[in-house]
Length: 253
Image 1: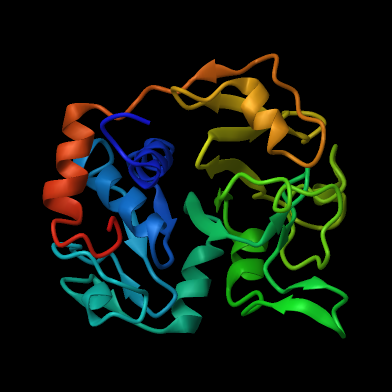
Image 2 (image 1 turned 90 degrees about the vertical axis):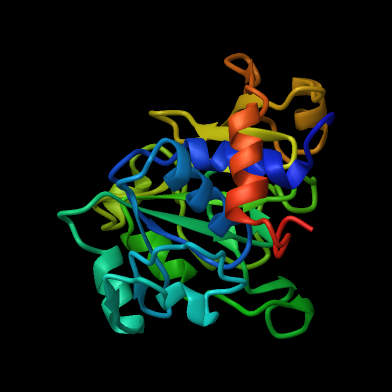
């Protein structure tokens, strides 16, 4: 990938999915890059908030984590966990959450709990945190994943957060009246979901990555027929990301 890194491509690609006016629930790391570059370029009226209670901060300096005091700098409201999740679930707002996971299945359900048997796991992760709440309550969510077969699996080792459940209208029938996964942004591509079956499909592959590369790194069959090539980062996007969003290379390094 010439002229830019995988991390820069992912951050800019995810940032392009944010619309001006969106209310964005951001976590630690790449999601902070994505939402901040979006605010700097095409979504100046989007509102960012963090589970630790910083709502609509200035983001003049990039926080290193959600517990970094800079998430409160210039904020419209310095609140707490309960207020943040109430904000997330507001039906009067279009709230978008950024999430990560260890595994994802074809319907966008997530595992961030463990690998292997729950009682005797091979690997134990931090668990849901606020991920299940965000996946259940937000207007939609975007997932960051490293694109590997062992992460894109036919069956999750543990079901932590709901995506489109079993496809079709199963999410709605289960009582989730809105929301669901919008996209999965990986180091190879952007995955979307079929509007009726809700199965994951390839939306766009990055320059230098072929649809076959994506299929070879996905642990289940995926529709490649509607894929296009993603636009590489523009000079403005890279300059903004590097010189305004993260000039100290806190996350980009």
